Image 1 (cartoon, rainbow, N blue to C red):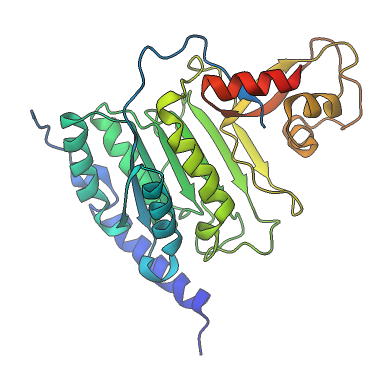
Image 2: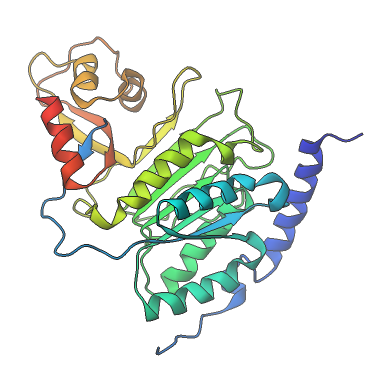
Length: 312
């Protein structure tokens, strides 16, 4: 009898083939959309937002055989709704249809847009973002969870992008990169060293759900730093380390006596995150003025101020 993983692999590959050749996941084939008339190293914005943004609108997408293998998207949707956030979950096969509706909704009632997808749903989330780009609509956050390897690049209209994947996965494994000229916040987390994580359960991880609900709930009060200031993050998360969803990196200049150990303690980040990102020895002294990449999580001003006080 064939294993569920093998069966899922066959189904997902077939779905991917159909998706690539159809208008469902290919905006170039589908044509243009008709317009309608109707703690962590947190970062503070240079200036506070002039007014609180409206609550985000979240679109989640299951992968192939979603009702069986992507139920984590349903759980996350429920958690978002319980937190008072507008969220709905769909099959990836109606990606274009939902994108069209999202455009109409945005024109009638502008609100931050968040796209989340697992497996083929991750491919859909990026395709969805590309459709919105053609309509000059920004996307506040895109999260892909072990997306298909044929997933498109992160388009330039995405402000924050997070990819959580397994590079050795035959069902997902999408190591997504951004389009040339991307200036948003980019973070990629490869969980291949976590043997307990598979393509079938990665979308159901409570730690991911908790962090995403918090980040989305804070979108309305979290202003972004100056465009182009963010440094992309790419990590292979150690097997004994929990997954912390940072948004991007920031450059810090070393002072006299600084080491990566000291900077890790000051910024409340694990030492491995600095040694891996900077390729420096954990105890080697740093030269004064030497640039060090430090991961950060974007947060509202109140949370940022609290984090700053802890570092003093």
